[in-house]
Structures are given as C-alpha cells and as structure tokens.
Image (tube, rainbow, N blue to C red; front, side, top):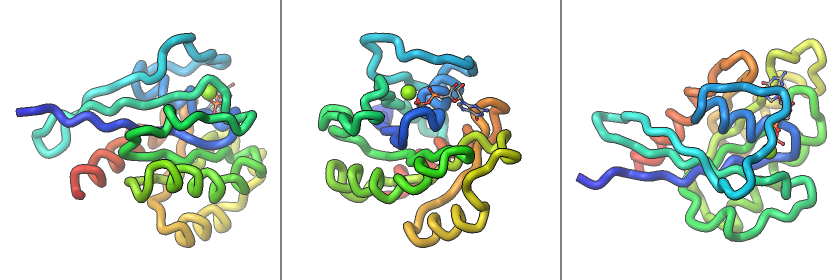
Length: 168
Ligand code: GDP
Ligand code: MG
C-alpha cells in the first residue's frame, strides 16, 4: 500500500499570509514575523482521507513572489494549489487571476482553491464580500475565508484539496 503524497503550491502576493498558513497547518503555530528557514522548501503534514494516509507537502517561497521571480522548480510537479489574497490588501485580490494563469501555465488544470485570509481584520477590509464571491464563481473555484491568526477554516482548505485530488 503506497502512501499518496501531494505537492501543494501556495501562491499569491507577498504578505497575504502564505508562510503563516503553511506554518499554522503543519506546525500548529502562528508568529507575527515568520521568516522562512533557509534551505527548507516545504513543510508537510499527514492526514487521513477515506481511510487512506495522505501526505501533503506544502511548498513555500522565500519571498520571491514580491519580485515576480518564482522559478519553475517551485511549480514543478505541483498537484494542487492554494490561491491566497488578503482581506486588507486590494492589490492582492486583483492579482489572483494572474496567479491562477501562472499556475495553469506551469501545472495545467490541478485542484485549486481560492482563499481570502486575514478575515479577523474585517474592520479594515479592502475587498467586499460580494466581489470575492463573484470572483470565485467566475473562476469556478471553491472559496474559503480564513484567519490563520485565529486558526479559522485553515484545515478545511487542505482537506478540500486532498478530497478533490483523490476524486480524480
Ligand atoms: P507571505 O508573504 O504571504 O508568506 O505572508 P506571511 O505569512 O509572512 O504573513 C505576513 C504578515 O501577515 C505577518 O505579519 C503575519 O503574522 C500576518 N498574518 C498572516 N495571517 C494573518 C491573519 O490571518 N490575520 C492577521 N491579522 N495577520 C496575519
Ligand atoms: Mg512567505
């Protein structure tokens, strides 16, 4: 019985909470200033889906996304994708379609989910609930609102991707 391993890429503009989400999901921690450990490409977590052990490998970037400099090696062999924007960053929302295009160019049509992070900062929202819903519909993506800080809905994101991957 060979264990299934899934490479998941987490993409979106800088500072939306990608590294924090990976840390939260794989290590159960949240820190205010998470800096990627040099030399570590991904963190992993094992979950069980339909009595099957699934190993999720969540690939992080070292901040190259801010310079539009993510290399092909990052995307290579990716089997699922999380597209993240932040509640408080309008630009990160407007960049989602472009990120989706990049992932499709490199990986084709893989299970993908749209995530609006930092919903704990809703008072300072720069994106309307309705426009986020509309984008999700337009892109035909499952949509989750998360707070990595408050540990809200983070598990659901990755469980959905694992389910979707196994459905193929
Ligand atoms: P990345 O550049 O996308 O990897 O973003 P980081 O994970 O480095 O996070 C950027 C900043 O946002 C950090 O100060 C995090 O602590 C903070 N952050 C991440 N997720 C949340 C969240 O859900 N709520 C709040 N309030 N802050 C968050
Ligand atoms: Mg990061």
